[in-house]
Length: 212
View 1 (cartoon, one colour):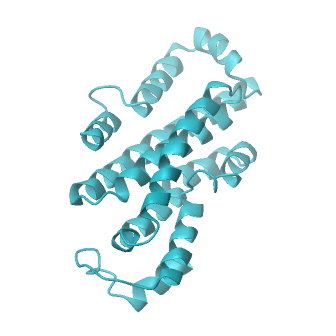
View 2 (cartoon, rainbow, N blue to C red):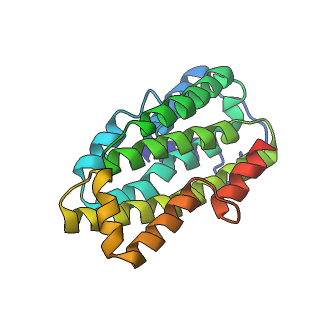
């Protein structure tokens, strides 16, 4: 946030999104690195799974729904400069992050770690849309940020409730808890379905528009 505050006073915060401008490579690299760590993009995501595993439920909800989205807002503000510097490198990070994190999610047995790596995978999708040359790509990225904020908050809330009752984060115990609490099972499954972009969900529309 201090970097975003500094940047908003050096440049016209409300107008430079809509006009072309050019800043130095050093400043662009510094700002983009700060926002990519906050986002976080793959290769800079090491802190996120550890925080999600150790933090309490309320902290995870604020982290997933608000704090991580500040990095996306910062990248959105400097997106025109990213068209000049490091464009191909960010595309590489986005694609590698989506592929690698998808495979990592397949082998996770911890609910919190699975949700954390799933967030990194979605963030790669958002970054790929934000750095696109097209104007509507940035608008779609904002929709994806909002949709991921809603679903991730619900996912971490339900994982926290499951942990407080079962005292375990293992996915294998979810089946037994679902059998005794059908309402929890229904809402949790609807949230997960919305997270992976089921048709009629807000995630589906944003991802579909991005792919087209």
